[in-house]
Length: 401
Image 1 (tube, rainbow, N blue to C red):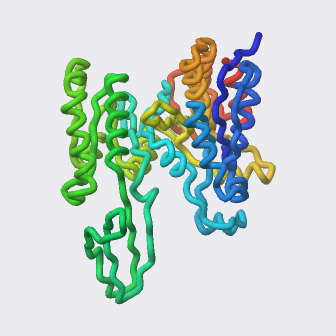
Image 2 (image 1 turned 45 degrees about the vertical axis):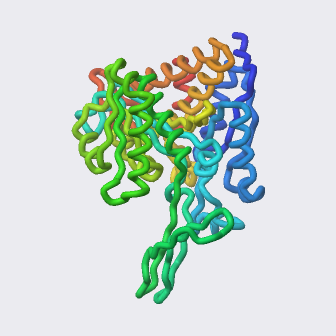
């Protein structure tokens, strides 16, 4: 067949460890035989980030703003052990945090539903979509170790450096730690509009949870901004669509989610979304079955898998051992990016190909061929699951495709 041609390149952000290996195989087996693949390539592997003093991460985010659509492989956010393992100059920040800060977007994570894989929470019949604010909180925090006898203050100055407000955080009678976080009204407003638009587009109710009873300024600001925008710009549209918006405490949302059948957009602050999306993904079956897309206020898109670099499998693969690594979420990163590129450029064949690849992947699993993590979860009458190694799974999908 003639390869599908692309007009505008995707921003391609390569990554680390086992997902980097899968990335190469996926392109070779599932994409390049069918698409004249055009990408603007950025290596976000940890060694390259270290070599460039992390400039490559910023360059990839700016390229996304320019080209409109990016696809990203999972990357390592180094801790002290990784600094030693890779001989890094410093403990570089999360590349996802950097990209999200530059794009100022909202992360939407949705489970990939397959017949035969039953969620651990048996009442969940429909997808629970996580909307995660992608700016501020601990991801842009300032931290310090504090010695006994020292005081920590929250200090606000005007543009000339004159003190506006000073609040004592704590007077330390022993050694401790202190952290400062921030957020921006304009970022919270963009987050709110992205979520309201997503709920309307997909016709699902929307729940926001925070802790304004404790955080009477920071969390309460989220509550107020969402309420103001909803009442002014979205209430009528929501009512016409037969859906609703609700704010309640984060712990109440968690309880409601566990009792629900799904089919809701769960809106979370940055850290809450990070944690809860992993919980929801695992409860639906596997982190390897969770899609993720970052959407900026001006309509730029960055697609990625919701999971990490699968370190344990990478160490095995490096020693020459076979692995059975789930590549479904990474496939969805590529299909999401290709479908959006096709949509924006008016290339129907490209969008159709992406949807067919998703269908082929789901049907491969439903017919009993899957990676090892899904075997204990699979239960479909008349179908005996077969465990495939990482590359063999991609080839089986290619047969179905």
